[in-house]
Length: 179
Picture: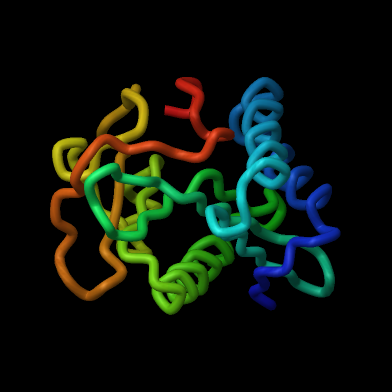
């Protein structure tokens, strides 16, 4: 498996993988919604505000993890949110997702990211260091429909402490359907 951060020219494959994985797992409407999110993230997010990591095997895209910036008005820490992430249906349950996330988190740590969050399954993301967090500690940019899925971790080696100020996310993610 090769981990990569090169996406230029691979955007259609990234969008297709995300769309197909979410369609297979949750239906056509969800696949189209999340595929559209990635399309907007890739096209409309400033390069400093997005990190896309891929897992490639034999020149075939097997997984994608998209991280975009969260800003906290009164906090200097660098914060990113993982949303979305997917592994090709035919490659799921083979450790690709966890390997991809371990690689991505190590790269983000080197890049100076202090905190990462995600909104998903605590059982899966717990394997790579994410733990449940409260909105009092890490405010979400929009109201959460399922607060038990709000997860985060510090990448600094220090405990995750309260982030100060209201949160804002990139434009593509600023939609209540994703929260």
